[in-house]
Image (cartoon, rainbow, N blue to C red; front, side):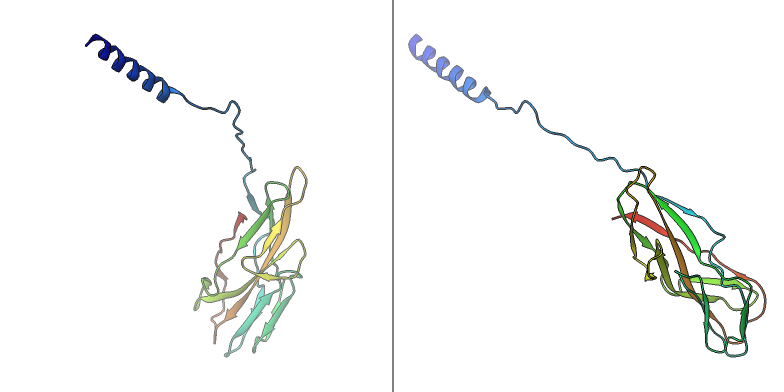
Length: 178
């Protein structure tokens, strides 16, 4: 009887040793990539359609995102003063790609003395490139203080018999790393 207990105890000890074995790797790589936070700064007074003279029919006034030129369609009688793009500087991780998101057509209106006027056909010109719709992308410079400039233009729809007065509004611009 004593022998069988020793034999069983020895088998249990051998089993425990077999299961207690393990494997390891002495050096497992671990990495991290640090990005500078992306920044956005308005470097102008914002988007301005200028002074507009309209008649009883209305029409559109467009600010070109690249040139800042103002054009009209429909029976807009005249424009005076200065119209201009909204100018921005985006900064962040050098050589990183980013996307620009602008409002949907009609989501933003200019309000004032009369009916609200919708803003549509948002366009962006990145680093002097051809105007592109919302979702345009850019790539930050490959330098320590990586920045890039872009301009935003759009089209304002002036209503039929729009009441004279000052009209204003705001719009969001979002930049995100790709």
